[in-house]
Image (cartoon, each protein chain N blue to C red):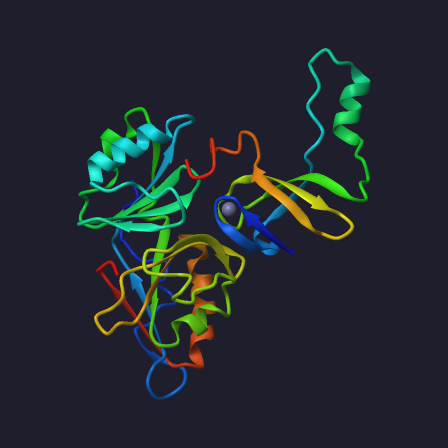
Length: 208
Length: 91
Ligand SMILES: [Zn+2]
């Protein structure tokens, strides 16, 4: 039998090179790939929306989003992804697929997306200007506040976009969740869009 | 053209796919050949207000029923299509 060496790698492994790129001076954009997260898609079964909402409330202590929003709990983020459905994003297997049996029991269908998506955090003083090149969503602070979310497209690629908590320096953070097989393509577009502002590329194990 | 998705809000046309006339209703199994032919092949060429199916594939992936004037592109109503997966908006 052939010997396999299972090596866990990011779908961005071939294109993400940590460093400083583009225009000189202060970098206007920071692109950070968030690695090794647990991501579960939750979809209410027909007519079970209220039941799922109750089960989610018991589990997380907050109501799951029913409109395009991201809701933070102590150890997870619940992100709206469409009518009657949301993502559970977390770390450390506590809210991974195997731990979510109570939600699965009757009211919802769950699908593990942990290795099916890439999560990219976009921040920096020019983050909005850079995102405006590939998104038609209005990201002005008066419209897209902390916790706002959108199921939308960037560069013809479906993404889930939401604004996380601001950084310590007050800068906004925009999280982009994209299908793993489209991540390389979107990454190139992001990098090209950010180049004129100067961009810092990195990766992190911490959810933004 | 922009469409106000009942789930997502106002979005550009590029996020949507047109899926045709929303009027035709699948005939009963014993309705006869003519009714089935009409349902499958024949469409009105409406110049004016029309009920259309659209798919928000670049967004929330919901099916929508859009009332649009084909002469002016004015959209007067957008609602979730029956059986689109969501029982009701915001539920
Ligand atoms: Zn939508």
